[in-house]
Image 1: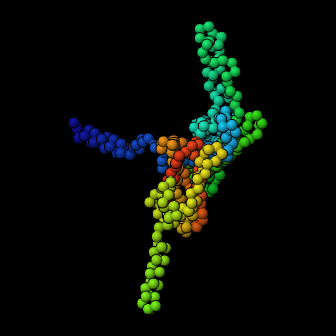
Image 2: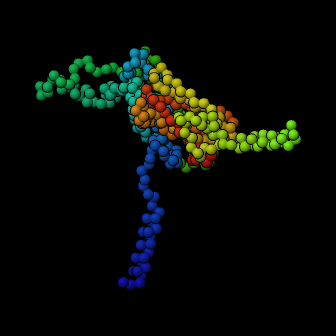
Length: 205
Length: 135
């Protein structure tokens, strides 16, 4: 092997060692106590904080306490994403639904939704009533579905403000309303602002 | 009363005043309360005065911890409330998460929380200094 080739091999090995040393290792985050730096966009901590504050507010208000002690049936209405980010609003709503279900005060219907049922199988399974291939003594009968009593709607808003040439502030507002469907009255409403200040070079979309 | 005795009483009184001023005041008022756990890194300047527990109409337990930042600096803390059922099992909930709170210097503060479900048997409030803030 020529001396030149030996140099090339050593150089390549050295470069590989250096590059492997510089690589950022992947780690799984413990979401129960995450000390990672905040980001200008919305991350899971923001959704968790917003959902938690909303549920606390709902439970404290007494709006979900049924007079006879039972559970309210709730439907998810429109949750508007008015931010510059592509957000699946279920990141917020699912947490609220789970927590309300755990509270024993509210159960969510998946048979009704503004864009059709959330679980289309609820209605699809009812089409089987006319099929001779199925045992009709089991399964659904007419009049079993329960109409929702409460509707949960909301909006996530983003406003960007420039502080100076180097810094910006991004305001996010989580707004939610619980409406009594029978009367159309908003029994509970709240807003949770999340404000972030950082480099104007950071993007929030 | 002898002059020496008067001087000794005066000296001891002064020493007691000085020592009480230097003592750590954190959690002094609620130091015996098993429901409150304060990390040793929050060692001075925060006084926890009262812990109120109340069951609301829905059966949910609401708690309010009141205190005062008696230092001349703004302090930042993190707190979390763990809820336990009648079997002593921890209830998993997003309501049991670490929250940040800023305590304004020489001002009172309140920490308020509600249980994730009714029929809670006990709870623990955990408080640490928020090191990420540099306070």
